[in-house]
Amino acid sequence: MVVVSVAVLAALFAASCRVETFDESPCGEAKDAAHRLYSFHFGNDMTPSPENLEKRKRYLTDELFKQLSANTSRTDYFTASENFPRTFKIGQCTLNSPNDATVQVQIYWKDDYTTVQKDLLVDVVKRANDWLINSVTPDPKSK
Image 1 (cartoon, one colour):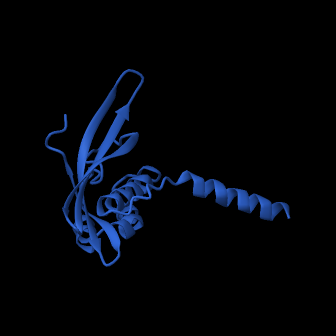
Image 2 (cartoon, one colour; image 1 turned 60 degrees about the horizontal axis):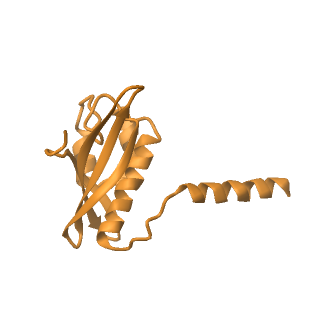
Protein backbone atom coordinates (compact mmCIF):
# COMPACT_ATOMS: atom_id res chain seq x y z
CA MET A 1 0.00 0.00 0.00
CA VAL A 2 2.83 2.41 0.87
CA VAL A 3 4.60 1.63 -2.42
CA VAL A 4 1.44 2.44 -4.39
CA SER A 5 0.97 5.71 -2.49
CA VAL A 6 4.56 6.75 -3.14
CA ALA A 7 4.20 5.87 -6.83
CA VAL A 8 0.98 7.90 -7.10
CA LEU A 9 2.58 10.88 -5.36
CA ALA A 10 5.64 10.66 -7.60
CA ALA A 11 3.43 10.57 -10.71
CA LEU A 12 1.43 13.58 -9.52
CA PHE A 13 4.62 15.50 -8.75
CA ALA A 14 6.10 14.70 -12.17
CA ALA A 15 2.90 15.81 -13.90
CA SER A 16 2.87 19.07 -11.96
CA CYS A 17 6.42 19.92 -13.08
CA ARG A 18 5.45 20.14 -16.73
CA VAL A 19 4.13 23.52 -17.75
CA GLU A 20 1.40 23.31 -20.37
CA THR A 21 0.28 26.43 -22.14
CA PHE A 22 -3.03 24.93 -23.27
CA ASP A 23 -2.65 27.12 -26.34
CA GLU A 24 -3.77 24.95 -29.24
CA SER A 25 -3.02 27.60 -31.87
CA PRO A 26 -0.19 26.79 -34.29
CA CYS A 27 2.10 29.23 -32.44
CA GLY A 28 1.14 27.72 -29.10
CA GLU A 29 1.95 24.23 -30.34
CA ALA A 30 5.23 25.41 -31.91
CA LYS A 31 6.25 27.11 -28.65
CA ASP A 32 5.42 23.92 -26.74
CA ALA A 33 7.63 21.91 -29.13
CA ALA A 34 10.54 24.32 -28.62
CA HIS A 35 9.99 24.23 -24.86
CA ARG A 36 10.04 20.42 -24.82
CA LEU A 37 13.33 20.27 -26.73
CA TYR A 38 15.04 22.94 -24.63
CA SER A 39 13.77 21.45 -21.36
CA PHE A 40 15.22 18.10 -22.38
CA HIS A 41 18.42 19.68 -23.67
CA PHE A 42 19.09 21.76 -20.55
CA GLY A 43 18.19 18.86 -18.28
CA ASN A 44 20.73 16.52 -19.87
CA ASP A 45 24.29 16.49 -21.15
CA MET A 46 24.52 19.27 -23.77
CA THR A 47 27.91 18.18 -25.13
CA PRO A 48 27.66 17.58 -28.89
CA SER A 49 28.01 13.85 -29.56
CA PRO A 50 26.27 11.21 -31.69
CA GLU A 51 24.78 9.66 -28.54
CA ASN A 52 23.38 12.95 -27.26
CA LEU A 53 22.01 13.84 -30.69
CA GLU A 54 20.23 10.48 -30.87
CA LYS A 55 18.48 11.30 -27.58
CA ARG A 56 17.11 14.50 -29.17
CA LYS A 57 16.00 12.86 -32.42
CA ARG A 58 12.31 12.73 -31.46
CA TYR A 59 12.24 16.56 -31.31
CA LEU A 60 13.91 17.14 -34.71
CA THR A 61 12.95 16.91 -38.36
CA ASP A 62 14.69 14.14 -40.26
CA GLU A 63 16.52 16.78 -42.29
CA LEU A 64 17.95 18.52 -39.23
CA PHE A 65 18.89 15.22 -37.62
CA LYS A 66 20.80 14.17 -40.75
CA GLN A 67 22.50 17.57 -40.98
CA LEU A 68 23.61 17.44 -37.35
CA SER A 69 24.72 13.80 -37.65
CA ALA A 70 27.34 14.93 -40.16
CA ASN A 71 28.46 17.85 -37.97
CA THR A 72 31.69 17.48 -35.97
CA SER A 73 31.69 20.95 -34.39
CA ARG A 74 32.32 21.36 -30.66
CA THR A 75 29.76 24.18 -30.64
CA ASP A 76 26.38 23.16 -29.27
CA TYR A 77 23.96 23.64 -32.16
CA PHE A 78 20.95 24.28 -29.91
CA THR A 79 22.61 27.14 -28.00
CA ALA A 80 25.13 28.25 -30.65
CA SER A 81 27.81 28.19 -27.97
CA GLU A 82 30.69 26.12 -26.61
CA ASN A 83 30.01 27.61 -23.18
CA PHE A 84 26.72 26.12 -22.00
CA PRO A 85 24.13 28.59 -20.71
CA ARG A 86 22.34 28.03 -17.41
CA THR A 87 18.71 28.57 -18.37
CA PHE A 88 16.33 29.48 -21.16
CA LYS A 89 12.98 31.15 -21.74
CA ILE A 90 10.55 30.81 -24.63
CA GLY A 91 9.81 34.20 -26.18
CA GLN A 92 7.64 35.38 -29.04
CA CYS A 93 6.36 33.30 -31.92
CA THR A 94 5.85 34.34 -35.53
CA LEU A 95 3.62 32.18 -37.68
CA ASN A 96 5.16 31.89 -41.16
CA SER A 97 2.44 29.56 -42.46
CA PRO A 98 -0.10 27.22 -40.83
CA ASN A 99 2.64 24.56 -40.56
CA ASP A 100 5.74 26.70 -39.94
CA ALA A 101 6.60 29.04 -37.08
CA THR A 102 9.64 30.86 -35.77
CA VAL A 103 9.98 30.74 -31.99
CA GLN A 104 12.33 33.05 -30.09
CA VAL A 105 14.33 31.23 -27.41
CA GLN A 106 16.22 33.39 -24.95
CA ILE A 107 19.24 31.72 -23.33
CA TYR A 108 21.07 33.03 -20.28
CA TRP A 109 24.51 32.76 -18.72
CA LYS A 110 24.76 33.91 -15.11
CA ASP A 111 27.53 34.24 -12.58
CA ASP A 112 27.80 36.12 -9.30
CA TYR A 113 28.07 39.48 -11.05
CA THR A 114 26.43 39.42 -14.46
CA THR A 115 23.70 37.88 -16.54
CA VAL A 116 24.19 37.60 -20.29
CA GLN A 117 21.30 36.93 -22.66
CA LYS A 118 21.41 35.72 -26.25
CA ASP A 119 18.38 35.13 -28.45
CA LEU A 120 17.92 32.27 -30.87
CA LEU A 121 15.38 31.86 -33.65
CA VAL A 122 14.03 28.32 -33.75
CA ASP A 123 12.18 27.23 -36.89
CA VAL A 124 9.47 24.74 -35.90
CA VAL A 125 7.48 22.89 -38.56
CA LYS A 126 4.47 20.62 -38.43
CA ARG A 127 5.06 17.16 -39.90
CA ALA A 128 2.09 14.81 -39.78
CA ASN A 129 0.67 15.67 -36.34
CA ASP A 130 3.92 16.68 -34.66
CA TRP A 131 5.69 20.03 -34.40
CA LEU A 132 9.44 19.46 -34.84
CA ILE A 133 12.55 21.63 -34.72
CA ASN A 134 13.81 22.32 -38.25
CA SER A 135 16.62 24.81 -37.56
CA VAL A 136 18.18 27.00 -34.88
CA THR A 137 19.98 30.24 -35.72
CA PRO A 138 21.29 33.09 -33.58
CA ASP A 139 19.00 36.11 -33.78
CA PRO A 140 20.95 38.77 -35.71
CA LYS A 141 19.25 41.44 -33.57
CA SER A 142 20.48 39.82 -30.35
CA LYS A 143 23.26 41.46 -28.35
